Length: 287
Ligand SMILES: [Mn+2]
Image 1 (cartoon, helix red, strand yellow):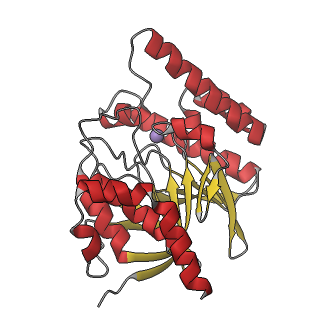
Image 2: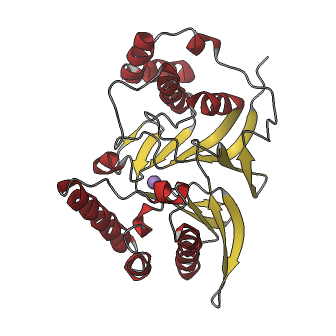
Image 3: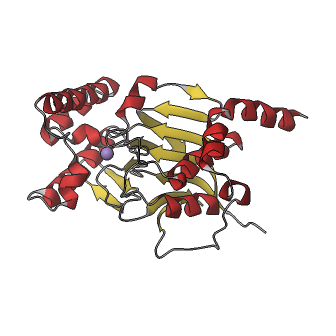
């Protein structure tokens, strides 16, 4: 018998599918173990930057299939774009059934407001980020544009795109300061705009803490990543917690038998004909 943990909201980010560092098998087990009402993918899920046609293993495809299946089974899936999947930003606002693509997401959880965004908008200059993001939605879009322009310039000069997670991982001087600046700017903005929760990814540092300044306070949450930390955020019974795959195996893990035996071609076919399947399952529900 399959026992899945019921969760109101599950948040994952920084999965980096399509790269060697991605731990797709562990993530796949995790997704199989939960039954969320809403699944928020907070950026850098598919790594289009480092995408290599020769490297996209079956386990990575299984994660995509699993997420599609969750959407067609009634889970609200919200894909927030990050910098490694910025190509999806041109589809922002698209909604297909229960699956939507956005650049940021605001919702209410038991009367508390929650603000979700990936966090790469702070990359180029954390100081400019502060005043630009004050311009509300316009500032956010503007910061995304600035980051894209900087990356475009870097690639024109034959340099690698700006990757803060790589810098942090490599322990580049200033990384610790960047993390604390990131948290400070994110929480200052959240307090200013009256959000009770601010939920980011991007810096691969799972965290949950309450930040206070002169104006007020907010709770800062970061979902971590599936490259090193194997973490997710879960909201249930009016509270948040950080799920850690390595320490927290709360319930036995089951693999979907039908998915396990599918080969690569079946998986690709199943993903590309997802619309047909959705129609079928809708029909079933109305019958
Ligand atoms: Mn990122």
